[in-house]
Image (tube, rainbow, N blue to C red; front, side, top):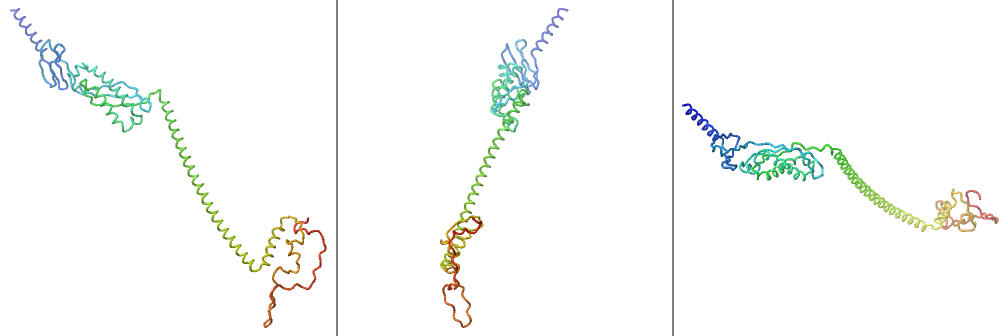
Length: 333
């Protein structure tokens, strides 16, 4: 009897172990692969209680939920040759458990592979942009480009990339001063360029102003010459009319002008012969030939005086003894 009870108990234990090994549960956040001698024989993606062959089959569970990967900080060289320490993260989902099992086996290896994909995408994509692009509104398209690159590499592994983001982009500590120096030199170059452009504009404005001044002065000089010519022509005309009206008076007037110019207050001493034409009006004390005789007023009914030059007075002119030529008025010789 005891043997029968022991056998029954052993049978019950064996049946319990067999049933326990034959049943497994798939949760709502899981998906499972049923393996038989290392080969996948069934894929279970629906939650519930499932059956399998005991001993010869085993179950590999994978998450249905979104998993995260935080790659280490990667130093990236941008298109402007600046270096950035870029920190990022990735979110992924196991889309094809069979392909995932065949390629990477488990989530740890998958995380390592995704880390390498993200770092390669950061270097390849950010190498086409500069620092301002990374920190500007273009960051969104840059992130999409990085995600697409990681997605293309992860899809053959049965992995769906949900998102890739940059969480930090800092200048390395060792290159901060060099970045400041480069920025300073760049600003100084731009300032020098702006100063050169300003100097060029200044020279252009000054040259235009000088040209305008030259043109205005030339026009003014031309107009002045024209006015002088008109004035000289008018003066010559008036003088010609005066000369034609009374040649003797004109000759006398011109002689007075010559006396004024030659014997002025310049202190010059002239030694000339008194018999020359220059002093002819000094030698003619009677006034003959100088100016027309002054007409006498006629009484009513009287005959007008005869026209012509006035007769010379009767008073004899004393003869001047011969002596050296007189000195011209002015300072004594």
